[in-house]
Amino acid sequence: MKLVTAIIKPFKLEEVRQALTDLGLQGLTVTEVKGYGRQKGHTEIYRGAEYAVSFLPKIKVEAVVPTAMTDKAVAAISAAAKTGQIGDGKIFVSPIEHTVRIRTGETDDSAL
Image (cartoon, rainbow, N blue to C red; front, side, top):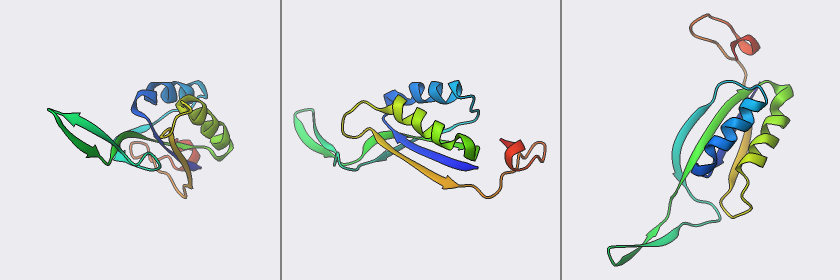
């Protein structure tokens, strides 16, 4: 099993969710986060004053997927989240050693 974590633009969330659902993957955790990378923030004008916004709003999407589905999940997220502009985000893949479904006690692949 692998944990696929994607940091994406907020308006791409529904497209990413649909892409993962189309693959037959269930279960997704979504968190609103802020950060910056190569974008380095931007400046905005509010009530006539200019100020720098260092951290931009992003969405963190996490899904635990079977190892065999990892490449397909990464490809689906990448295709759905891509705009071609700077700040599209990143995808991280981490190993998962053990999973337990609390309600039933199922473990590992059957807990997904």
